[in-house]
Structure formats: structure tokens, C-alpha cells
Image (cartoon, rainbow, N blue to C red):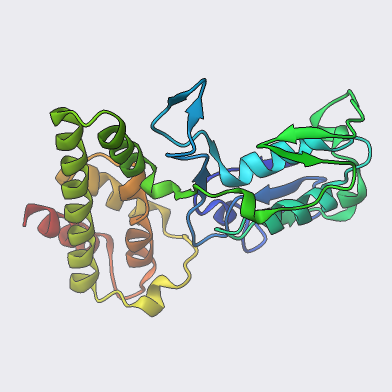
Length: 258
């Protein structure tokens, strides 16, 4: 099995031996365990049939591996070669690989298609590729952090629409982000969570973590793409040996009520 995962912090699915190397499963991810993934073909390069879509049309890592698959011979490109190409082209996050590396020499056609079109040239994004695929990281000129895609969408609406509602929606999102940042700043301060604590964490105390998320949703707001970037704070709090679930929950409730 070959698995491609496009998600922020997607490497966290497989770190610390979570994916054994004897299961005949190979996985590659858009990002390491500690960073966001990125969108691409975002405004102003989001035009379809002459019209701005006001959004990102794809994800940087996913677009890179799918466009590579479109442009090469399915029987000639290997998993290992595709990983190297996609890693070189995905410059905003660290593309990772995990699991069983032994079948990296297998062709991508064994996993993605039963047909080999043997394309010798493909026109993708205005760039011609041949059988000797030439990575070009510079071809993506409108990339956006996945956590900021909604903000980019609302900004694009203001630029293309300019209506009063579009401006209010953008202002509301900015205020939401500022409030969210302040809530988690308070949580970190109350629980004495340092930058060193935030550097690396592997969640083991799942009961505490689930309860912390539930408390946040009850006391503050539902989770969204931007709020999710802060969930590491709650994970770290639950892994600090001197803290317990009640202390974490109290810090969340206090921050949200103020």
C-alpha cells in the first residue's frame, strides 16, 4: 500500500515508529509533525474560465505529486523518484516519508493506475515536461499557509467584490484570529508553557487531551482551521507531568471568559 497524506502536521501520524517498516505500507506526507501544509493556485492565480474563484485551487504537496504523475510515464517513475521530485518542489513545508522503504523502486503505476499513457510531454501550468521530469519550485507563485486560506478567501472577496458584507466578513475573521491568539497566549502563561515545551510533543495522555478540546469547545468556540493550529498548546499541557486535567481545563475556561 502507498499512502499520500495532505494535512497540516501530517507527519505526526507516523512519527516514533507508529508505522512499522514490516507492514508493506509506504507513506509520504505534506508536512512534518510540527508545521502547516500549504495551499497553491491561490488568489490572484485562482482564475478558472476567466473568473477568480476567490480561493486556493489545490494544496501544494498534492498538486505537486499529482501533476508529476500526470506528466511522466507511470511505468518509468518510481515511488522514490516521485518523493524526491515532490520534496524538491514543495518548498514551504517538509515532505516526509515513513514505513517500508523497500519498494521505493516500484513504479508509481503499480499504485496509481493500471494504464500507462507513456506521455512524453504534458502541458501543466504552462510548463512543458518531458520523460526527464525537471522539478521547478519557482512555478508556484501564489501559495498560502493552510491556516490562512480562509483569510485569503475573504481578502480575495473584498478585492473582487468589495461589498460591505465582504469587508465585514474579513474584519470578523481578523477579530476571531486575534481573540484566538490571545486565548492561547493566556493559557500558555497560566500553565507556564515555554517555547522549549512547544518544540516537540508526542501525545500520550489522550484522556486529558480529549477533555481539554471538549472544554475549549464548550467554553470558547467550535474548532476551525485557524484554531486547530493552537491545539499543540493543549497537547503540551496534558504531557507536562506536573499538570493535571483539572488545571488545564481551568486555564482554558479562565482564558475564554476573559
